[in-house]
Amino acid sequence: MRTSAKTKQKLPKLKKGAWFVPLRGSYLPYSWQGWLLYVPFTAYLVYTLIVAFAYTGNNLKAVLWVVPNWVAAAVVMTWIAKQKS
View 1 (tube, rainbow, N blue to C red):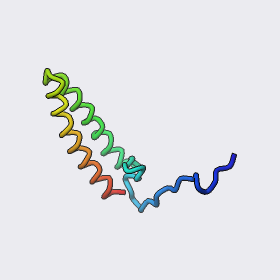
View 2 (cartoon, rainbow, N blue to C red):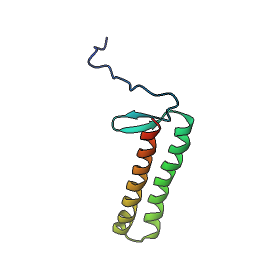
View 3 (cartoon, one colour):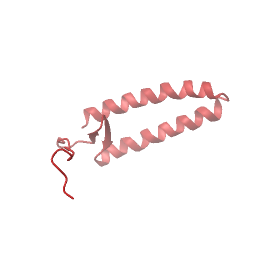
View 4 (cartoon, helix red, strand yellow):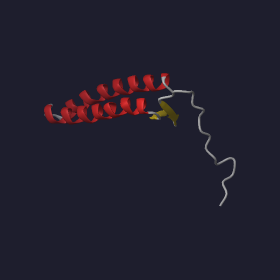
């Protein structure tokens, strides 16, 4: 089965030394530097989720604590990825 020209995905052109590759409105790590940033970012998201639900004692408080932390982390990570892709 052949794929037509319309169904082929166009890969974005990467500049030399890019750490991240843009993909559907997000960024994925492309080099070891990107992974070096991406792994702690993911660990931070998991850590904040665990800490929030373990120590707040209330689901609403946990969500109200997690959401701003995740939004701030995502904004910073997206900004870095945009600069380095």
